[in-house]
Amino acid sequence: MSKAAEAAQELLDKKDLKGAMKVVNDGLNKDPDDMALLMIGSCVVSREMCWGMGYNLLHRVMEKSPPFPEIYNNLGMAASSLASSTGKEKYLDEAEGYLRKAYRKRKIPEVISNLALLLIQKSDPLQAETLAREAIELDPGNVSARETLGYALLQFFTVVIRAGIFDLHADLVDAAFDAFSFTGAIYDGGVFF
Image 1 (cartoon, one colour):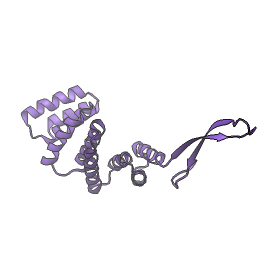
Image 2: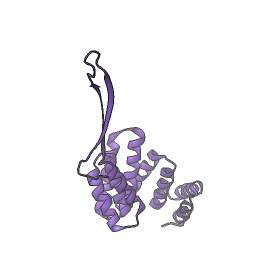
Image 3: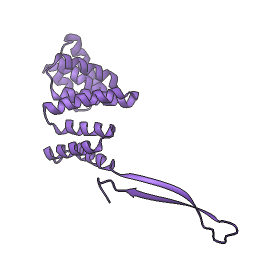
Image 4: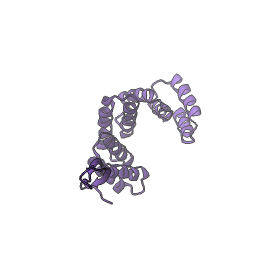
């Protein structure tokens, strides 16, 4: 890692995004092929909610770097964020592809948790639950994996609300109508309170 990348990473760790981006810009002006700086730059812009820029920077990193799972993970998360911000489903599929590549490269709890979150977003809570449990087995203290498991389990609840009109026919002369509502939870085999 270059000295500029190390300095930018230190600033990023201190949450000094402006300082980190200045170091990234200065470093890339001297060496536009410094992949570590590009990766840090993509992290900075992603934290500033600039998903499109981060997505494109990560594509450049991916083209020029070995296929590290962290790159695939970050690219998957950028694509997932683009899907949310643009409403374009194609980014969700792309995000899943990148996260699955990262998962196959190395089973990192954060990657597994991110993949599980994406599967919740794609309405596949059963597979998301399995992945979240796998992430927790690898790192029992991983807060992200535990939260993801909670989100996955919540997807198993279905609440059905039904309203109807009930005719009492109490006096057979003038039918009295009474509105009532019924709320019930359907147990679908997932979880039950």
